[in-house]
Length: 210
Image (cartoon, rainbow, N blue to C red; front, side, top):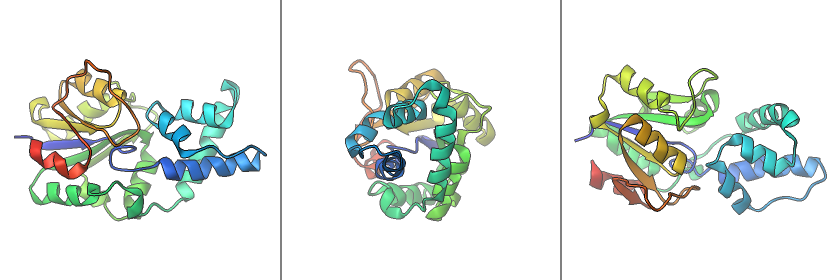
């Protein structure tokens, strides 16, 4: 039986594509560019923010850092609501806490944004740890985020389960030597030869594997 359940954030708990579309399309309109469809953003979110920003704003590498910083400042102004989370995700988190599981977030999103999003809908207290980009810890698929969580919570690999929606999340689980469940309603895809504990299309089905 698992003791710790770690979640990716974007595309696993949080359906952030609509938020990102709204923010970047506003920037595009300000730059006299046409808006882009939501599918454009969904195809890039799981790859990483650099690819997302460079593709959606048609910018060169030299302008990436300033545009990325501006995007994150605009995101911080957005108030996340429960409707921005996938159905059953919040109820599943409450279930896990009620049953005594330790829970955590491992995300490549900046840590200040992760905590802001969770605080907006008052669920930050449902997590024992939230780990994101802090400009120090290597990002996924490097396993250091996972190792940090397990070390701080004093829980072993064999007792840890990771849920994510991308090939990056899968590689992270392999690098950290922990079991992985793929959430297939997110933004990423898995290669055919990937071996997972299971694949789910709603978070409440996670209970089957605990």
